[in-house]
Amino acid sequence: MRIDFTPEPSLFPFESRWFESSVGRVHYIDEGSGTPILFCHGNPTWSFLYRGIVERLRDTFRCIAVDYPGFGLSDRPDRGYGYTIEEHARLVGELVDHLGLDGFVVMGQDWGGPVSMAVATERAGRVGGIVLGNTWFWPATASFRLFSRIMSSGPIQRRILRDNLFVERIMPVSVNAKMPDAVFDHYRRAQPSPEARVGVAIMPRQIIEARPLLARLERDVPAKLGTKRALITWGMRDLGFRPNMIARMAAAFEDCQIVRLAEARHYIQEDAPAEIAEAIRARFS
Image (cartoon, rainbow, N blue to C red; front, side, top):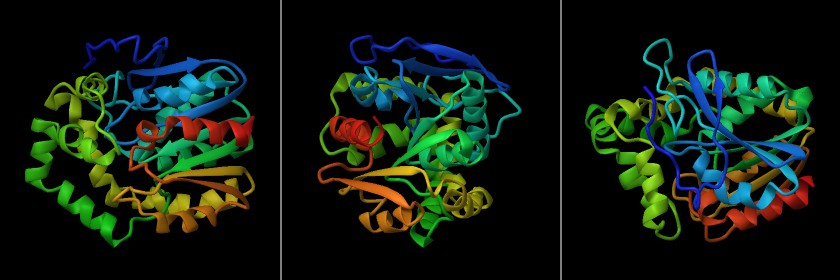
């Protein structure tokens, strides 16, 4: 299925582009010129999440932000696609190769961390830098597994599909300040029906089910990307991704800078786009 929604140009002042992937039409933006930066989102967000960062960087960077199948404006494949993290990474990799990106920086937050690291470890020779924020790339700890089991239960899955639980209830408490109604509406309208929310519902199950991928990344990120310049931008008020995770992430990289976003919660791109853009510019210009 396709999403019948055109973002408001005043909020999303970018040209929508389309990639005919192996499973359907994938939406992305490609703004500016210079060093490419690939932005990978998490759950239940889409390229809209990165708008404040892209607006601030497109004068000197080529900014590419993609919607995975099942998210944002991308198609919801009817069959042959399981909405797994492995599949999302494969599709993003297809786009990277289609665009011929070389020397690119990759940024991931939430599930965008594992997706971006899976893309990058497969193309390590073409990666110029790493940006990570409030994410992980190793097998889930006990608290994350508990969250996965709760969110994968029948009653909660029904609420995700029927009531848009992630957008309506989880997102509002995962930002530092109330999102303007027009902004919040863009997340709501990108997941307009239960049929459109299948990918959102599957992601919590992947915390456990994607263990083979996460175990591979735990090994491959330091082995293949450990010498790349790295930047960690971390929301210090995130209730799920606690600051004590920073040290484990930073240990994977020989040259790693850390920017602590004191007031940001989980969706750091909403809470601190200016600070993140400034840190990226200082690190990778």
